[in-house]
Amino acid sequence: MKNLFLVGGTMGSGKTTVSQILKSNLPGAVFLDGDWCWDMDPFVVTDETMDMVRDNIVYLLNNFIRCTAYENIIFCWVMHQQEIIDDIVSRIDADDVNILPISLILTEESLKERLRKDIDQGKRIPDIIQRSSQRLPLYDSLKTIKIDVSKISPTETAEKIANLL
Image (cartoon, rainbow, N blue to C red):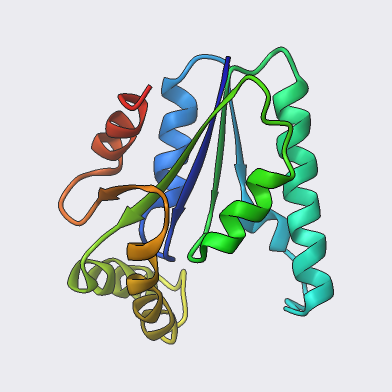
């Protein structure tokens, strides 16, 4: 049986870092960051581009699932609505796949601290704090395994996720 880790969380929650660590620590692992499917210039968010991005994500996840080289598939993205998770799950070949939907949650204070560091390093623009903070409450209602990352390292977070198996 394969494992599909759907690692969600707001921007600044550590999804990418945690997923990279998981990829290194789990056997036969492959990693897809949903942001890679949005890496375009100009960055245009329309119904058409959102559908295209989800189609590309589902296509890649299904290819990873079918490939015998991979036992553990790690996908991370800002999945702040149940509809996003449900859409992806409904379109993958889930036979013999253990799906683990996970939300990395954190306090608003911790989120702001992390994002300020990124802003100071030029990795993000200041409006990210308000946009990310507004999404925090949305994770409460998701049908996911919640892991509070406010006071733990990415390595500790990855260990908690790996221990779910």
